[in-house]
Amino acid sequence: MFHRTETRPVRVGDLTIGGSNEVIMQSMCTTKTADVKATVAEILRLEEAGCQLVRVTVNNREAAAAIKEIKKQIHIPLVSDIHFDYRLALAAIENGIDKVRINPGNIGRREKVVEVVKACKERGIPIRIGVNAGSLEKHLLDKYGYPTPEAMVESAMYHVGILEELDFHDIIVSLKASDVPMAIGAYTQAASRFNYPLHLGITESGTLFSGTVKSAAGLGALLHMGIGSTIRISLSADPVEEIKVAREMLKAYGLITNAATLVSCPTCGRLDFDLFSVANEVEKYIEKLKVPIKVSVLGCAVNGPGEAKEADIGIAGARGEGLLFRHGEMIRKVPEAELVDELKKEIDVIVAEFERT
Ligand code: SF4
Image 1: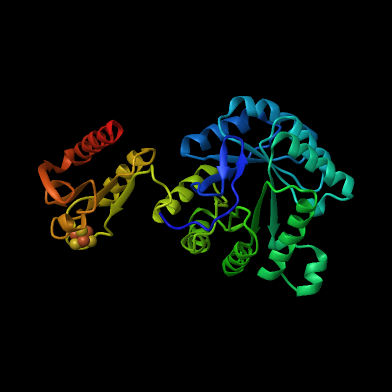
Image 2 (image 1 turned 90 degrees about the horizontal axis):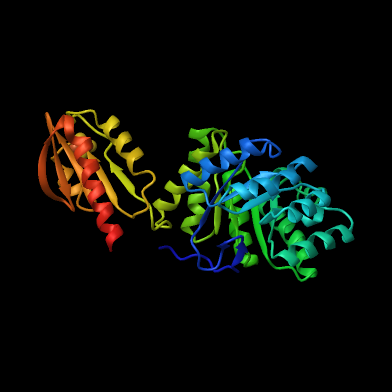
């Protein structure tokens, strides 16, 4: 496990973000929040994929009213995304929201901020301050000329200051930019300026392919530095894909302890079977496993055993058959047609062993 930069722990429903806790994976609904049926259906799909926290937009009274019913039908904490309108924040809080994303400096008159903070305090609800390079305050753009990491951190400090002045400290901060170096700069500076948990994200990162690469580049650098208590991958795609990407990213850094990992080779001229199909089928099979096992699918027996040593179970293909390995030791040969089924059976055995211990 990598060292996490120490932050203040902040409760969100039954989760704790920050402190020494694991990095929380979150996503955001693409539905109209007022459409309870569609929103709940999407959240349940996200939950099944491993999403731990989900955000909905609260952009009108109907959306705020829907929170009560949505909350009854889901099993993970719900966050409301609110811009400017403090009445919507109050309505969301009244209806049982678990966390509010709102920038106090954008709410308007001090009394309105005081009212929102009071309601959050009474119910133990945290506030996420969401700084975005694309919507920095005018005075900061005048000062810096254009969005910079320094301007973003100054914006965050401005909003944090408003809450601290009201003795409110259940704060989570995000500093999102679609420009990767800018986001990395803003998050690293923020991590050295305050100890509130950081919600990581590369905003508007793109489609499933380009957005995944961009998010991995930015968030990977930050996670490697021990920065970040919760992550959201922003993709122009089904939000379930965001969770899948988040999981893989956290697995790559050893930040998830209950997920299975696939190791598969790129193939080369030694290959004698359809490895890509096998690897994809096995990946799908282990996707939802909650045990930290490593499964390898390798193209041939030349490098296979050595490369499979680290794996709990693996196969190495050969002409017309495959070799099954456990911790690098061959356990038996299997005809090619039965390879995937046999591997799945062995995976089930290992999972059962893990569950017994
Ligand atoms: Fe090539 Fe075999 Fe290595 Fe796969 S495991 S890349 S088939 S040498």
